[in-house]
Image (cartoon, rainbow, N blue to C red; front, side):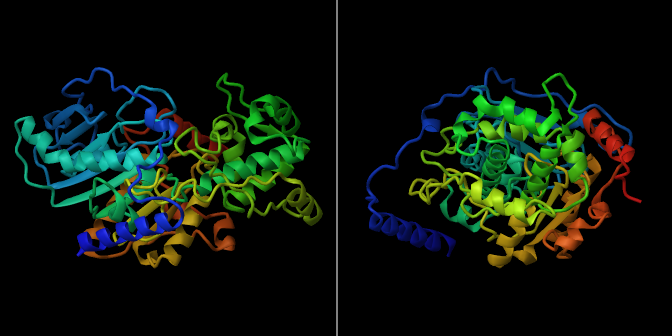
Length: 482
């Protein structure tokens, strides 16, 4: 049935594209990303086991661990001796614009092995913000799981269930992987049984629209209203100096001190990225993710550095709000430069997925999504967009969202990630939908204790120093849960 539906949809798209001036028999246009070359370097046939930790019931050194390269992407696969027959695919985040590819192992790796799950992770065959490559290469690796095992001398049954999880851009990969559009158009198709996107770009292009809006607000407030967006590098020093008396300079100090004008700007940023909420102040003050927006996101061009061929960033529908200042808000809305995206920039394609796969909110499997409240690189507003799209797409019953009181990008404790994963598994296997947070009601999100229900300030062997330091900073500023 799905095969016939997919064929029909593909034919319908071909007719539509022809009606819009495209010939269904013509090859699709290329983009700069298509001509870039990437390298995995030398890949060993295996990788190191995790060190033992207190509480382990499975010896981490007893797993089968295979690495290699398939179709230009490196991979890691790990299977415990007591495999439970289930496979978890891990999707990594944005790896920059370099030409070297690398595999990232899941942060809940120990938990997966201790519970009997196999896992696999791809480097993807391309860097940049290439979510299409992320979805296709992750799916291709899932489909190759049994062949890889057999080639390494361990014949395994086909996985009884396949799940997917990922961070940041990998959260985008994760959410897109279970969308109906992906099932219809992907070249490598996997029907996942559940998903856990973490700190994910689950609003896809809306993230880049927010980046554009944040930049245009900064420029308008500091006298650079008409400066083209791609000239940010020439004005960033002046803009920064007007908005902040202290700003990270790469020396390691992440603290930020705004000027009076900077406080006005941060009010705008708050309302663009999710509204009044706990951890927002700590997020910009010391969380460390906002400088990434300032120094990385504002320098990404509107075609996402060649992942697209036309500008996609659009701020024409943005409404800027300065708390308690209706006149100032009106003036900013009247003066801010409006960026206009091309509606064809990320259209449906005849050769597979969109170049930036969409998260339309149409999925039929359990999804548990978690996000930190103070994240200003992939803000909490992504969850609000996701909730709205899931409601419009009829998928709200398949989505649970949880707010975590972290102050940076993806700064979860391992316990928080494990709890979200286990909640999805219980939901998928027992049919009992777990509890979550309301991400759309403004008064709920603004409550001082919002995010406390699923925040776990406990640390284990696999929690990093950065997360521990950030949670300590929250405690010092009075932001810990009662």
